[in-house]
Length: 93
Length: 500
Image (cartoon, rainbow over all chains, first blue to last red; front, side, top):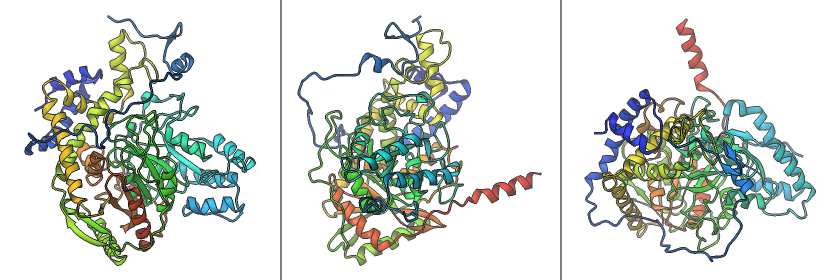
């Protein structure tokens, strides 16, 4: 059963700030959703191969030829903060 | 120019008028811009109407008709706002992308632009396409033109409502668990999810990459085929894209002689409204009148499809949405104290409740100690769901079911309970897990609201589905148009009066 501490831990993994009221609501909602999902455990899947891809395609490659990518100007166009043609971010602590 | 009814005009008819010189592209665009002016304040289908583009580009098509003569030239279209469009803001209905200006264009959109369609605007959706009612948009709640108190379905609710309301001739949407078919059903139009890989996902803002697929929302099956013809094809920019073994054909079937149609008993069990069931049963009679043979079949793992989907889709979403970190584009929180604070607050403030919920489920399912129990198991259940379909298609050509267990529901009636919202897609989700093509066509009304009929086929059976749907469409003869009534207006007035 998922609890508030689990929710805080997972939110940390997901880099998602949740307010206290969100933690409480999320704990309640995730518990209900996971209870529904746990229905899967009724099935014996020991000998079933997982589906990685729905169609029979393998090792799709393309010619290894260089082609133009985004220009620096375009890549920076939507950046919230830019410094000397680079993305600017706050310091790490 | 004759007066055109945007509630009924098909792309096929509009094209005939354009080619015959009876209407210009600019006049055709104006039909839709006028309808937008008349009803958009009530329907709210668009996040952004590109008035200037529609006026200028349609005039250009008229002026350069010789050079621009193509199968779609001059036909106006609406695009779901999760496909990037160079030079036109693309929000995915999220605060986190509120002023995002793409520097490239999605392949499917590029293909129709190259065919000289006229873009009318970008339509509303559930944030990041996560939802079944379009109520999860950060901007507005789109309403269903059949009853403005109800939702249009989702997540392509804006595209579906725009077509149903005559605010667009046709539209593009995307379908991860039913997001084209369910809103098409609730809005009384045609919507198709192609085989996984048939349409490039390049430039479709990723939700769940192994499930997402772009497709058409139209007023007829013929239009659906016409639009599909122009968006399919292998794309070097999408490694999962494929070339369909045969080109998409424009349907002309009148009969269904010899067609074997399976009806999965699991899809007709609890939860299907009586009115939906009645219209479905009547449509099955139509199939048989046209020469088809219907038999009951079993897809035994159906009840496990929804649980598997609600691990796989959120797991993929949690990885795909990691890119929204306030560094390269989109929203950034104010005055972050350090990098981690910026990541966490940007995402906490920028994402809505449903998106956060799915990121949390996905992250939980992929986290150490839970991976095998959730994600690993879900991928195995996915195999079982696919196998059910493979075995069924050994005996039948197509599978039929209601698209949605219910007709359009009242806005606000399911938002408090995420699971009740997830149940909307019980008949559509297995199809995405198996990567199959499926269509929804209107098959009648229940309590004045449209009911959708779903046809599912094996991989690459687009033409069989379209031919069958076309013949059925003719037999059903679905004729009503939305009324823009508001069943909530009276109730709201009564409640207000009662409160005083």
